[in-house]
Image (cartoon, rainbow, N blue to C red):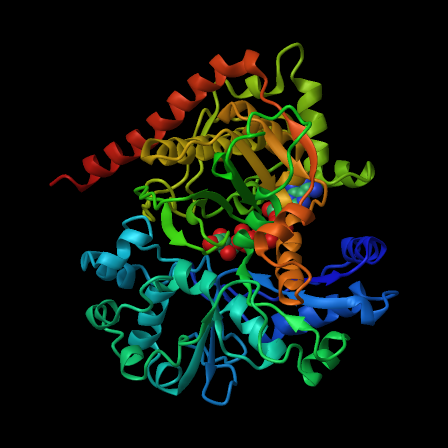
Length: 535
Ligand SMILES: Nc1ncnc2c1ncn2[C@@H]1O[C@H](COP(=O)(O)OP(=O)(O)O)[C@@H](O)[C@H]1O
Ligand SMILES: O=C(CO)[C@H](O)[C@H](O)COP(=O)(O)O
């Protein structure tokens, strides 16, 4: 979520204020693979942060507001009150989070239909999309939720509705997560075939029958009530929203790259891949014509950059996996204590610790006999197999800080190897990618960035504004206010190259070998499965 001010100084002030402010959002995990949030809590957090961010700003300078958010499912009744998405009947928990994997049986049945809409989600629908979650609610919470529901929103659309009272959905969320087609609209036969014919009967009023392109201005702008909540002035323009990864893509992919010695200079924008890496990583590649990449979501028309098709590769847990590996290690308390004593983040400490123990070799070579397969939460791309599990090979009896640091390094490398795997699948299908544009929390980690450059063999561009996802949302606000005539124009003006990290060509052979091992790991996992399932 982000605001947009009209002058350079105002924008600078917003960025500085924002860098000092964030606000935790409540999460619940009532059962394994069930992840829930509260839409009221999320809105309240937006209000707290916005009020802090605009301190010291002349509110008259704020002309537009754009929202981005994760693609979680928000459920409200006909009067727009929260409905429970859980067996406990707790209506405070009315959001099924994007990473929730409760609807496995539902998604398997949806995929068995082989309906033609599935071609546009990489051939296989993900359990993280909305149709299986809706079917789960219908099959499991009929009385307490399904029968009472009046509105199912993607979280970014919920936020723009809260701000404006307009229930129109963004093309981005409906195309990417709900099977809507920018060209053909809803496909009645899909919803009937999967057992969700209820939506057809009421002309899709519960899931959206008014659809707007991201950046379009909504209704009469910010309502007086929302303005009070947010500490802004009523009537400012509010844009149709974007999913967070897509906002990150807009925030980085259109930057002017002249003068940085980049191979993509003078090449079409389709040679750039935006990688938004936070809790999960999303690999956003665009093309003029539709490209069908097995196991990679899309192609989605106009879902990110207007007029372009989008393919979205992804890894369901990346930042979350690194945190999981590090925090679960026996040496974590020691790491925390040492990092705190040096006033460093645990990751800055681990990176400097790796530099200490690497001796004369490049740091990446410390994992010559330690390999990780990173699908601890299933594989999103390019295998689209949610049954896959994580793997580690090369463990010893050691539990010291060196061991933790090297395991952390192997995990970071596994994520970068996964990115290479996704890029190869996209290129085999017709993409031609030369440069990565990284943003999100993990792009603040220099080791993560260097490993992505070394392992993919591509330069990595980092933006001047580290929170590029917010730049994407600000681009929407700037379009809604009419300050830019198009998203493309706003992208070119508002995204700026900060730093470029080039691959260390001399290490290529080593990483090619690590990649060979990486591919063997999943091959072996599938063999183990076949052995165990053999009668
Ligand atoms: N300064 C940093 N150094 C290393 N890792 C970081 C840093 N800041 C955030 N991260 C990692 O990025 C992840 C969160 O990224 P973020 O983009 O904030 O998440 P989200 O996807 O929820 O928006 C965390 O898993 C964290 O480990
Ligand atoms: O599916 C996605 C985008 O299409 C994202 O993974 C989801 O929105 C969550 O993102 P984050 O890693 O920022 O929490």
